[in-house]
Length: 425
Length: 152
Image 1 (cartoon, each protein chain N blue to C red):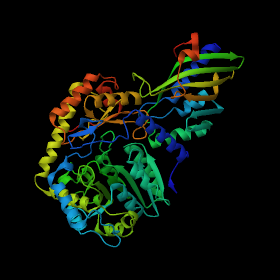
Image 2: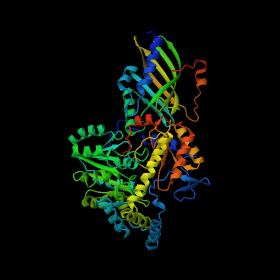
Image 3: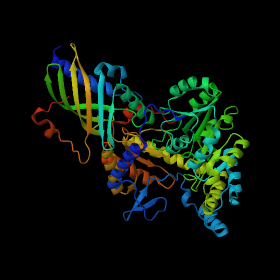
Image 4: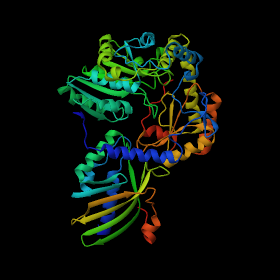
């Protein structure tokens, strides 16, 4: 059954359109580039060092000496690759990593080769024959790809974070289906908005057949106790009756600054089931030893008492950037307290010009256009991380302000238009 | 209302019913009033040419909305040339699409070729064919409309 289509759009046509869009961006020099030297705070592009506002290494741990040393030590111990499927044999480092991740999340946790492969392993195992799936239109592409594997169940799209539409669908689907899986991101990586956790919790209360699968890749590490992310903080084990119906995928690739993905599961039995029959758990290559070493070191950092102070430092930078943007009159797509910032632009050309100008001024930021965002919502995306000093943030905001507000209408109009949730004090 | 005013009204309504704000959808009921039940809509893109009737157009547009290809759509007429004879009208209508009516620049520009039928009290769209400006297909308002440029 799989995706419930109202109209079949040819895959070839879709690929042709995406290819054309990417080719245009590549021709303008804003996509598919190659960096030279990289040190976290700065990266080299076309022989110039730019201040880095494009990374997802939100806590700056990719340059942490303990992670570097652990990667080197793992290479010394195991070599560059442990080229045996985990179906047969796994590198010893997996055990320590999963033990630490279970302390981080407070739940049984399974490591996967990546977050994408975690979805592809988990969803076909979690979703059973008499289930249905509802997926947010803006859920990460890897989630949509994973739902394509669900041949025997209906998969419905729902408009972004529309709790009313989800509720309506649940009303229809709960009549015919045993369980309904709602698939969402915990933090949407283009506009930087959180999933409506409070509303999702209410839906879990209202619909006992509802199960949640949350991709919290972009909130792992910098948010929540020990970096367990927003979804587990809001819907995890402390919500006794809800946590049994919530599965959260985490990333070890972004803020965590290593490699791989992880699944925080409601019970140990599910962990065993996915480990035994989740496709990529059997047929995909394992995480390489140096990255396992880095992941173990990162997990240890996350379990230290000082980790919350590191998280607080990032939150201060985020708040600083939000305040600076507001003072400069810079329109933003959302004002959620996340490290992802998005300046809407009126056209792709405008977004491209803004990016080219900011690069010229010494800042690396990313253009955003279809297919990453809707056709009508192009813009400039940048991230705030612990690589960025306050003076870097000041300089970026000032550069964007000095460029002039050719992007979009005034901030208040933007806030109203896209139904922003104001940040909590 | 005379036929000339009625034609203007139908064309304005056509642009209004296909436009919608964030979180909305085209005005499907409004489209049924503006478009003839036998209307054909044809879209030219670099990837191919698509032919729709009203039902399949609605299905295609809804699928695109569901996928998040668009979350809002504003199409505004910027110039028009009309030819009428009896109960038929042909309109070449230049448009631009924007992310909001207030946007300073546009997402895209193109030309609608529209055939309308007079049904005794109003005009309805029988056929809509459109193509967009691209590299290799430049948009030249003066060349298209010469001295007949009139703002919509």
